[in-house]
Structure formats: structure tokens, C-alpha cells
Image 1: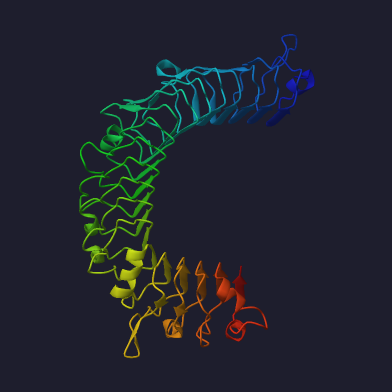
Image 2 (image 1 turned 60 degrees about the horizontal axis):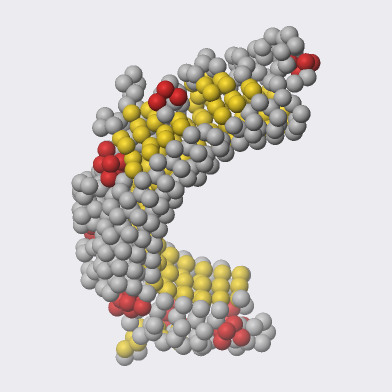
Length: 470
């Protein structure tokens, strides 16, 4: 570092970049006082810099990037808001106090355990792409922990800090070799737990069962995961449950306590999941159910109509669900998305006119050739007048769509019709005056008949402000 910079006593921010020949933080021959006012320091792309150790009493933010030979040595009395280390060789520290610690691409870092981090007072830690990191042992006073791309990581342990009440609120794990989690029975575990890309992980019961204050559980891309809880239940505090790409998960839990605060349930690509928890219909806070690509899921819970707070329901690509509960849909639904021949057929049989709050309806993968059906000149399916958006997708046999289907839809603003290759043009000017957008995709017959000034449907759609055909 140039001696002139080192003598700037009032300096508050310092950024040093692309100094390819720089080797010493401050050369020994330079006599200067410390930077008493320096608040932010960034060192980037200094490949020959080998040692950083200096007393910076006012420092709040320290960022070090791409200094591959650098050993970072931080003095014990340093208190930081944020510490970032990306692509450095090693980290040495004493009793460090920092609000946010970020460590990335430190290839020789093998352990963050016991005395190394037990003195660390921090709220948020992020560790990414430290390929040699094997063990992590931390206090349970964290608020957020993120671990990603640490392929050699084998164990993660939390211990209780007896001197402080745990403020842990979030834990995220993302690594290839993590196969088990070690938790102290007295430890207060996070409110937010996210686990992703853990191909060896088979069970998270130790975490879930201990996390009595868990509010959000996200598990994604865990191909060997088979169960969530050894007690066959989930914390009543849980508000969000999200399970994605867990192909061996056969069940969530047997039963949910009626006092569970669950608001959002999302299950995607869990091929072996056969059933949902009993008691789901008794949850008085449930607002959203999203279930997709669950091939073996056989049924939806009975009495779903009792879910008075349910606003969004999405059931797609679940071919084993043959019947929808005979009681029908919860009447307060705001959005409904369904796909599959069986479910689509039942939609028309059950009727939707009772869903007076429904604003969005999407129906996909039906097998009928026309709808709605008519008997004695009467339409057998009436849609709720509250609808503002209507979607039809992938009806390969659909030939006819009656103009009566759209009558009384005075609030309708958007219609999307896609992948209906045989659909013929509508016979009358059926679209309501309220319609603002019409989208037609992969419907060759309909597309031809909607050509500007040529197609027989052009006069029926010319009044619509936005027409998208492709």
C-alpha cells in the first residue's frame, strides 16, 4: 500500500482493487498510525497479497475478494456489521463480533468448529463453495445460517449458548454430503429451516422434532429423504410447509394437530407421496394448497369444503387422484387451478357457481370435445360472475366452446386459450364488453379464423384492447 494512503487519518472508506504486485498490507518500513476513522474496507483481486492483520477500531464492513494467497487475521476486539471473504486462503480470528459473516470459495478451509467459532457472536452466517469444509459447530444463537456448495461437509452441530437466549430464526443447508444433523436437546433451533441439494440426507426428524418454534420448513432436492418427523407430527407453530423434488418421500406426517397454524402448503414432484396428513380439513388458518406432479397421491382430504380460509387451490398432474371430495370446493376460493382428465370432468359436474369469490380459474388437460353441456336448451355449467381471469389449456379434442359459457361474466378481463388444436371459431359475439385481453396460443384453427380483416372471428374480437395470438 502506498505510504501516502496509510497516513490518511480521517479516511472512512477505502477500496483497493487489481493491485497485482501488492504483497504487504502495510510495509514494515512505513511508520504510520492506524486508520482511526475507517468504516468500510474492500480489497479485491490482489493475488499476491499474503497477510492482512491490522487494528481498525472504527471498521464496520470488511470485504475481501479473490485474494487467493491471503491469510486473513482479524483481531479479537474488532466489532463488525458485515464480513465477506471470497476466494481467500485461510481465516484466523479470535473472539470476533460480527452481525453478518460471509465466507465463499475458501478452498483450504476444512473446519469451523468448537473454539474456532464458539466465540463468534453473530446473527447471520453464509458459507458457500468451501470444498474442503468437513465440520461445522455453531451456537444456536444464530438468526440465519446458509450453507451451499460445500461438497465435503459431513456434520453440522448446534450447541446451546448458556449465556444468552437464542435468537435463532433461520437455518438453510445446501450441500452434497450432509447425511445427518446433530442437535443439542437444549438448543433453540431456527424459526425458518431450509434444506436443499442434500443427496445423502434421509431424515430430518432430529431437526423438525426439536424445532418447537418452527414457522417455515422448506425442503428441496433431497432424493433420499423418506420422512420428516419421528413423532409423526409437525410443530403447531408451522405456517409454511414447502416440499419440492423429494422423490422417496412417501408421507408427510400421519396427522396434523387442529391447532396447527399452517397457512401455506406446497408439494411438488414428490412421486411416491400417497396421502396428505389427516386433519388437514380442520386447519382454520390454511390459505393456500399447491400440489403438483405427485403421481402416487391417491386422494384429497374429505371435508375440504370446511376450509373456510382457503383462497388458492392448485392441483396439477396428479393422475392417481380419481375423485374430488363430493362436498365440493371451499366457497371462499379466490383462485382455482386444476389439471387432469378426472379432475376437469368433476369440475363441470360439481359446478362452480357457488364460488362467489372466485376471480381466477385455470383448467388444463381435459378430454371433452365440447362444453358446457346442455340439456333441454339449458347450460349445465355456470361460472361465477366474480371471475376476472379464465384459462383453458391442453384440450386436444375440444371442438366447440359455447357462447353461453361466457354469458353473465360481466367482470371478466382476461381469457387465455392454449393447446386446443381442433377448437372451431365461436359462432356468436360471445366475449363480454369488460374483456381487456385475449390470448390464443397453439390453436391453429382458431388462429386462422382470428386473422385481422380476414378471419370470421375478427369482428368478434376487434373491440378487445389487447389480442395476443401466436
